[in-house]
Length: 337
Image (cartoon, rainbow, N blue to C red; front, side, top):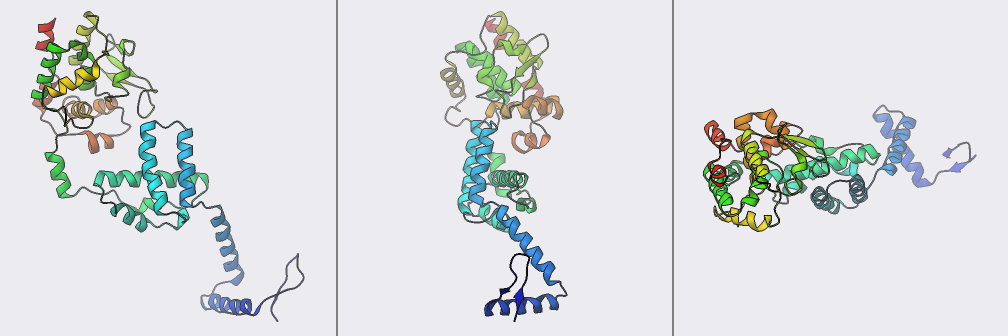
């Protein structure tokens, strides 16, 4: 009769079913030239690790709570929450380590997302797994086996046809309209066009206290920057001229009627209802790359590397267009002055 002895129980008798399972297990380990005790110990270790693993939905909840507690910006949290909550719902009831990379790829592909959005989803799920590994809720990150999605020919053609930046003529027309009808909007508009500050949170917070005309920089405090990192944006000569004019005219960087003025300026070139996302920032980045180079532009934009700059902000412009964009001695400014 089979029995198992340990330090706590002198005799523990096996049932007939257990005897059968032990016989099968013994045959299996012998056929594979394994040690039965080692196999059992390994399986016990696996089961103990599984007990420490988190279910996907539980990990998602803890992950989002941690990100909120560490002070992520509200806009960042909205995007993050949307993606990982969807991931948690799709794999509810599964352990993190049970989800395979192929399943994640299928999940992303099934939603019919654009390539850029697909990569955004993979990035946030990867962040979820990296956090879970650090917290001891997972051991593997399956997203590491997922390559970056490449744009299709159709997507590239659509991107080429889509309007992302302003032309030189459009900038000139906007400038002429602003100097003529709402000069109080010129300082902030110029900062957005020639310093590339983010249109809302950064641009709307800038005052003369943040600007040094003598040292030619604009200070973006950490509390206003998207990535919570303060930076100094170099003031190019054209922007320096405009800001010097605004200072002499005792103008404020912000104006009380900014929204209505800005809409009127957009309408002056027929783009009020079709203004491209972050248009002034994209415009600045594209012309600045051609005029001032990679490092200068990257620092001005507040990017930690070139990838973001080239992947999302660059539209190819010719060198003479860049020269024209940053040309000094603005005639409209001189006319008003």
